[in-house]
Length: 300
Image (cartoon, rainbow, N blue to C red; front, top):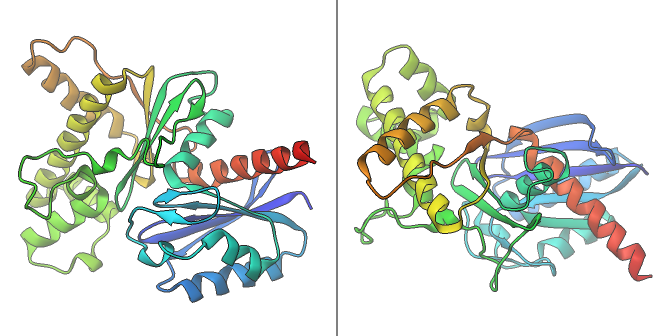
C-alpha cells in the first residue's frame, strides 16, 4: 500500500493521479469537475475500488479547508461548502483522507521538492478559475486565524465595489479572461478556453491580444501589492497558465512599467513559475497526506 490517490478539484476541471510516497506520478487524468456531490463521491468510490492497494486519498480543494473536513468560504464548486467533505469521502472509500486548500497544496509541493525548498518566506499564487494563494512563513503555510491566510484572490483592485468585477479573482483569473473575450466577441464563454485565447492572441486576433495584455497587467498590479505587503523572498506562480513559457517575461515587463511610474517603489518582486506547475496541487496534497500519516503514527 505505497500509493496515494490524489485529486485536485478545480472550478472547471478535476485532475487526478496515483502517486507514490516518493512523489512519482504513476498515472493521471483530467475530467470536467462533477456537477454534484454525489457524482464526485461516486467517482472517488469507483477509483478506490479499481485500485485495491491504495494507502489513502489526498484532496486539493478550493475554499478555507479545516482540519475537521468542513470547507468554509466560497468557491466555484458550491457543493463543497456545507457538509464534512473529509468524512463523506472516508465513508465512501474506506480510506484515510487528507484534505487541504488548493493553493496550500501547491505551496506544499514547492516546499517538498520545488522552487520553495529551503526558503523561509514565500508567496504562492495559483491562477485558474479564480486566484488562490498561500503565504509561507518560516517554511510552513500560514493559514491565519480564520483559515483565510493567503486568500489574496479576495483582494480589491478597484474602488468600484458595487461592480461584479471587483476582487482580483474576478478580474485577473483565466475565467475572467475568457469572460472578457466572450463579451467583446458576443460569444458563449463556455465555448472558449484560456489556451484558445492565447493562441488567437499570438495569431494576431486584436480582441484576444488586448485581453491578454490586460490580463498580464492586472496580475502584475496584484503581485506588486503582495510584494509590499509581505516582502517575500520570491513569489511563485502556479496553475495551468504557469506552463506558458512567456508568462514570467510578460508579467516582469508589466512590473517594470509599474515600478517606473511609482517613485517610491524600489524593490521589484522576484517571480518564478512553480516547478511542478499543473501537477503542483496533486503532489502537494500527497505531501500533506504523508505529513498527516506521520503525525498520526507519532501520536500513537
